Length: 218
Image: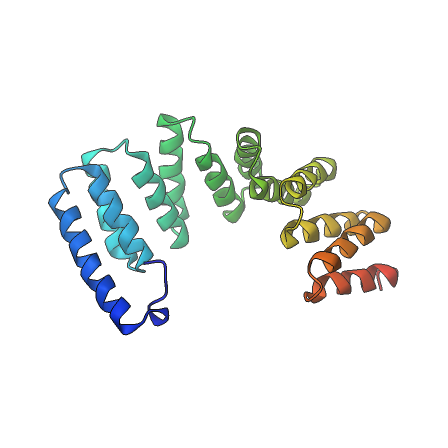
């Protein structure tokens, strides 16, 4: 279901339709168990039908209100729809009953950043960075919010950590270069720009940064 329909050949579309019908019947038969509603929620979310996805996530939670995968995915569905207060409530419920589910700290931190609450965003992204130290994207996003709040030394450490984990990421390289330029550390920024050009010669961003730095920021 993650493949766009226009990429499928006619016989593949026919086979998929049949397989989906069989899958839906099997899950309908098992709807007395929370996993079935959860699976159907995931299915309809992937198919671009948020109304049905919400219905089945709620059905899973009606059977077992502590089934955190359904609660988490419903919260993410609400977030995509801009229903952030509802998403926040569900994420907090998940953390209350499953404090070791560290991924929700990350999701909640991003949600608070989106809601314009940097204080709570910092709290939850900080927890996520501490409990998921091998997740480069977590360090990157934590670094961005630290930078926004003027905590530049801490932000730099997070960007460095993200690059240690994924040294070829254009996002992390750009964030690091931008961080250095904003603080007048043009020599360091230039070194990052050169890395961007080396790793992505077809991407003009590295060259533009280098030209900007070499022109003295003009």
